[in-house]
Image (cartoon, rainbow, N blue to C red; front, side):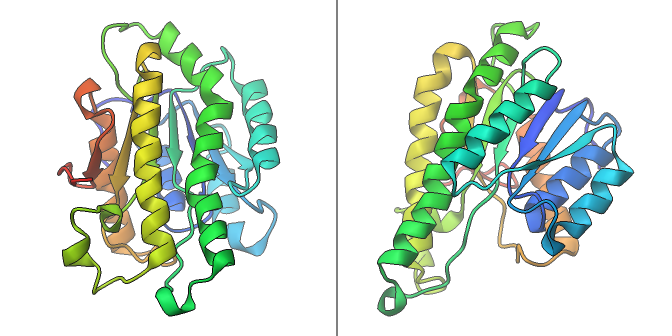
Length: 257
């Protein structure tokens, strides 16, 4: 993967045991100038679904630290923040990629109270608590950055993984191919969270944006995941203040709310 310079010194990736999250950790660790610290958050670090992540972490044991982090549990997020904080040498964390999420492929007739609430908890409340509990470390990174005049991932940023089907404006053209109520609605709410955080964190010099990784079968590996993550990291590494509060796709194109 070609990145001209180090994307950041320290990064947290949630939902890192498979799909896009695993590939993000893999490409970050394998880059010519990897971050000094990569925190790979996943729900069950010792379980069978984290086997590939454990192998990857062992290969890059000086860089990757696996953190137990269940984004549907505020207590788990709070505990993860304390653990990460204890491992940060100067108390600063440059980048959070809120990748953990659930995609419920249910039409209206099959969508009940539980599906709506569970999806919202993971896709909206989880990223909100991650941003809230890790904010002191982002603030520290932003305040210690050599460049105090601009925003970037090298300074401090929160990236929320969203989707094209979160777009209310695009709904008429995308609904037939993906009539998923819980997922669409939760990701539209994630977009509003992104805008709120972008406004709130602006005073601290922390960039916040959302990114659509493309149509990737996230439970599968393979070339499409590799290409998507390459694109995502290229976009993330070149973000500026103008991109804060926006939704972009993995090629850097804007998506309307």
